[in-house]
Length: 303
Image (cartoon, rainbow, N blue to C red):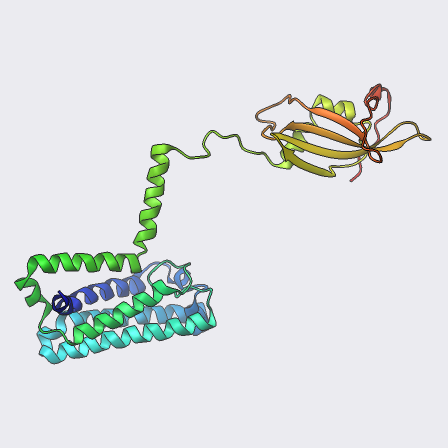
């Protein structure tokens, strides 16, 4: 099996480098690919990084062509030289990754895989795969097409396995597969939060409160904007401060409003609102605070 894998290495690695080089050389929006990556920092600018990315893509295509055709053109020597070139290319990738990891650990490599993934084990595995594949190609016993001709079934199975590994390392197939599985689960079983009432923003509760009859009744007592708020047992509590009593006997109070934490103007135009007035010093309820408030002049609310 190892000998078969060695002899098929030029084909597998050549196809991989051909795809990777084509993506770099002919891919759309290369500026987006290199922006914010370690390559941009190394090249000192997006424009230079784009040129470097194109150059790497061209180099990959040349090495891929050599791996696939050199044994037919130059015999065993061609296989050695093409395999060595691939191994050196992988070593250059590894050196770049080490430099990027040291100088910009949070940046991505700007290569074929996911653009926002920081340089990590996956990136080094890709570079290592190129090094190992190049070394195996350099010592292949014969042209890869002869191996495929002699062992078609085994070669097909082995190449399929190599393709799966490459897809995981280079195309983030595992991430895409997990995303597809999550979407399938949501379609079959439904979203876990589907149908659950949402908690509305505090601003929506304040807007709803200020249009309620409870606010109209308590507004003459309120002398401030919203001071505090909290949610408890499905209720949202809104605290304001105010005064109660005549000028000489006026005392500071807290005016508490409670309404449904899920209610807003779209779901409850006339909400149920609870009101309580508490003495700020003693914390005791002021039961007569809302009696005859309509006869009093409401002062402007200040924040």
